[in-house]
Every structure is written in structure tokens, then in C-alpha cells.
Amino acid sequence: MKHWFLPHTPDVLGLLGQQAHVTIDGMEAFVGWSRGEAGREEAVSTAEHAADTVKRELHSQLRAAFSTPLDAEDIYELSERLDEILNGAKNAVREGSVMGIIPNDALAGMAATLAEGVQHLADAFAALPAKADEATKAADAAIKCERAVEHAYRVAMSDLLAVEDLRQVVAWREMYRRYARIGDAIVRVAERVWYAVVKEG
Image (cartoon, helix red, strand yellow):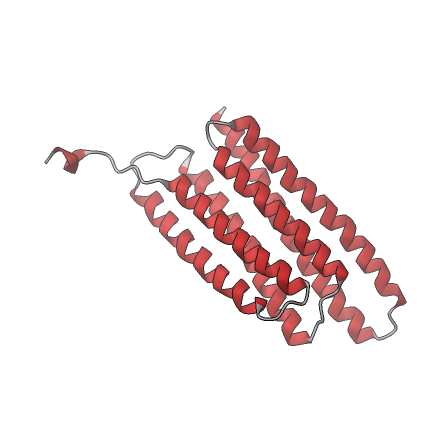
């Protein structure tokens, strides 16, 4: 009967890592869609729903946990901010499909870099809390990916100056902006990794 009185210590970081890996799956599908591969829209949506399920389980376990390896607020924020990334990808795919966007090289390149950034975030999560230097190095690599996406965004936007159809310009501008906002979401996660490390230190 002694186990009745043991504190509840669920593997909340394991769940955060699981959410990150589902997000990676979703971003790989996002890259496929951005390259014009058929059937990838549904895969992005499926991954987003799976990530939501893991996120809800993580939040439930946080409420029940007696103690956590990182501050519970930091784990919660990392999960919430990570969720914004896949939500952004799903929304971009949906809007692109509605507008009849045929993905081009600019979208494919930005998507691949965004997926790389998410992989760096997963690496950062895996290093927490014991390997703080590795976690912040991975977070910095994720931010570097966002900078590359920002550069690609500016190039793509400048190319729109040669497009005469105003409707096409508006549609493509919105798509490029959605991809750039996914990069912003990656930075938000990376910055929270840094915050969590500094606070623990």
C-alpha cells in the first residue's frame, strides 16, 4: 500500500519530446505539400490533430505532477508555442488549397528550412534540463533557420514585383507571409528554451 503515497512524477519532458516528434512528422508532410506532392495536405492535418492529443495529455500530466524536471510553466509554454508551428503549417496548406496555389521553389525551400528548425527544437528539448549548453546551441540553430527563411521571404517578395496580375500578387504575398510567421513561431519556442535554461541556472 506504500505506493499510494508516492508523489506522482509523470514523464512530462518525454511527452514534450513526443509532441515535438509529431510536429516534425507534420512539418515533413508540410515540406511535401510545398513541393507539390499529392496527398500531403491530409497528412499535415492528421499530424496537427495528433500533436493536439499529445499536448492535452501533457497538460493533464502537468496538473497531476508533484514535481517536474523544469518549471511547470516553462514546459507548458514550450508546448503551447510548439503547437503554434504546426497550426501555422496546417493553416497555410488550407489557405493555399483554397486559393489554388501551386507550390513553387520558394515555398519548398522555406518549408524545408522551417522543418529543419523544428528538428533543432526537438534536439533542444531532448537536452533539457541536464545539458543546458546543448539545449541553447540547438535553440540558436533553430533561430538561424528562421533567419534563412526571412531572407528567402524577402527574395520571394521582391520577385512579385514582376507579376502583373494583382490577384496573384495578393495570393502569393499572403502565402509567403504565412511561411514567415511559422518562422516567427519557431523563434518563440527557441527563446523560451533559453529562458528556461537561464531560470534553471
